Each structure stands twice: as C-alpha cells, then as structure tokens.
Length: 413
Image (cartoon, rainbow, N blue to C red; front, side, top):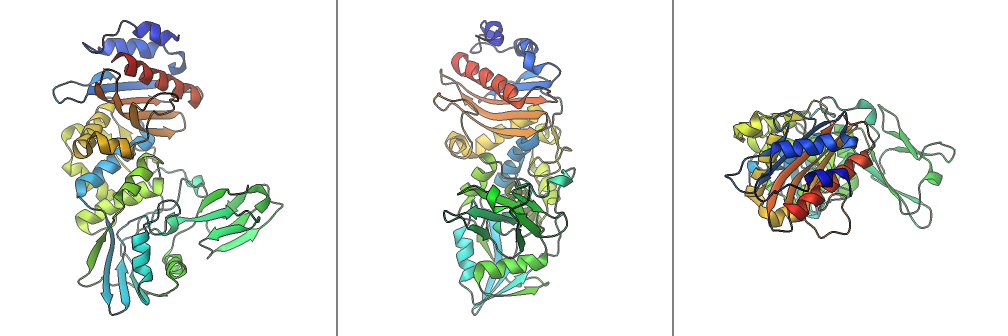
C-alpha cells in the first residue's frame, strides 16, 4: 500500500477533513515534489466550507476552463441559437451565430443540414464581426493539429478536413474542396502549409479505417465553397443583415456539452462561448461571451479567474481552485446529478470500479488538473478539484496520484 494511504489512514472525513491533513498528504508524494499543487473539497451542502490547500492561489486551468464555458452557456438562456434565417419563397437567407455543429465530422446537427438543403438558393449574410482565428497565447505552430482548428463565426465541418482510409485502400476526403497532394514518399502521414490550404497526404502511412482531422484556413471564400459542397445548391454572399429573421435553436445541446466535457473539443468550446456573446449582444465574440458572463457570476468566481478563451488552450488563463468549486456548484444547481452523470466522463483513469466520480480533465504541458463530483461508498457527495501545475514527472505518474486519492476518498469519506 502506498505511503499516502498510511498517512491518511487516520482521516475521519465524515467528521472533519482538515487542511493540515491534506497538506501532509501532498508533502508525502514523491511524484509531486517541485510541483505546485492545490486541492479543494466541499460537500454538496451550502453550509459547508471549502477545505484544502492553496485554494485561493491562481493556477493554470488548461481545459478546466471549459467548466466556465459550459456555465456561461447555461446561464445565457435555455436554448443555443444555431442560425438566423428567413425564407423568401424558395430562397433561404441565413446568418451565422457562432454555432459549431453544421456537418461536424463527429457531432453533426442533422436538422440544420436538412434546413439548408431544403432551399433552392441560399443567401449567406456574412457576419460583420471577425473572430481572431486563434485565441490569446495559443501555440502558433499547432496550426495543423486536430485539437487546434481555427475559430470562425460560421464553422462548417468543424473547420477541419476529415480523411478516412476505406477498406479498398482509397481515401475519403471531406470536404474535398482543397488542394490535396498524394505523396507515398512523404515522411509524415500528412502535412499542411502554414499559410495556405495546401495538403500533402501519404496514403501508405494511414491505416485502414483510420480517421485523420486536419484544420484548414477559414475564409469567406471557402465558407461559401463549403456551403455549396454541403448543400449542392447555389450560394450567394451578402454583407447586409437579414431583415425580420427567425431564430433556429439547437435540438441537440447534449452533443455540445458532451463534446466539450467528455471529448474536450476545443473548437466547439470556443464557438459556444462566441455563441454566448451572440445571445447577449447579437455579436459573435468570445471576448463578449466572457465579459457578459463574468457580469452575471458571483464575486467568488469573478475574483478567482483571469479568463481569455473558451477552450483552455491559452496559457494566459488563470483560476483559483476556490473559483472552480463555485463553478461546479453553479453547474450542479442548474443540472443536478442526473445530467452531470450524462454529460461528464466518469471514473477518470480508474478501471474495475463502479462509477463514482465524474469530472473534467485539463492538461497542458507540465500542468494537469481534474475537477468534478464524487460520491463515496457512504453516499456522501463532494465537489472537488485537484490542480497540479509545473510538475516534472511523467503525466502517467501524476494521473496515478490523482486516481489513488480519489479511490481513497471513495472508500473513506
């Protein structure tokens, strides 16, 4: 049995969980040496205080910032606006809202696609506001990585091309509207030029039934091209607003939340926060979504976060564990445990156990966090966050430490 079990065996968490006991556990872990660690726990009862260590210190949240993005969407209203539109005879006028699921390769909104295909002609009223393609302090050299698609006001296909190798050995490319070079001598399975939608694929390095997602450079021109490719209809571009438009609301919000919380999809997270900005001000903007949300949050969260994007790719983001606990509490108040169990992944890296913990990870190089909800063997429920920054050990060792601590809480709290 590991050392921390020995040190924690005297814990009586049902009666009193002291900050000093948590601090002793942290100091006993060799894998946490030289790391900056915070742990915060709170029973799901309003009259209980938050316990832990460094609960008011600012930490790098990575994808834990997505918890705030989800809360922003929940607080902005009951519905997610997917499209502004108006039919004039058989011509469909559309305007974007930042909604990210139009023919998304993993989470498509079929109702939205069917609406567009029902028209004979589409008039695309492009947004007057431009979203910066990357957020503040994003790594510029991640431009060809699947986790880093460009942000845009009207994402189509998730702003990536999807390449799949079929059983006959052929490649399926969607959307097939860009310059694709097949090169069996290339040392990489795929490459993309930094400033041009020019892709090179080595079919020999792509395995059967593999699916590869590669971000493309977004522009008004290829948005029109993608719309034409998707709908097979004439598409006309306009710069003016639609007069007397209707709003289409998403009927698949669960796809949005599950893609963010279970799969940590960065583009959907960024787009959802831009959509929040639209819901408040009719402006598709991540910055507006952040500002308007902060205005509506309690001081405990406002004062505990420096918030710059929706996904957590920005290293400018800072958050206190205390603010994470209050965020988890707010989400719980809106959703309850049943929805939380449906939208959050369960059991972290723990195998062979009944489901007892539901949470969101957050990882950047040398930073790993896990925050969520835990139910113990005695039926006690807690909000928790474990944030480990600036570690030098392998990530697998950090995950093992967190896993062991959660299993101990399950058995003893």
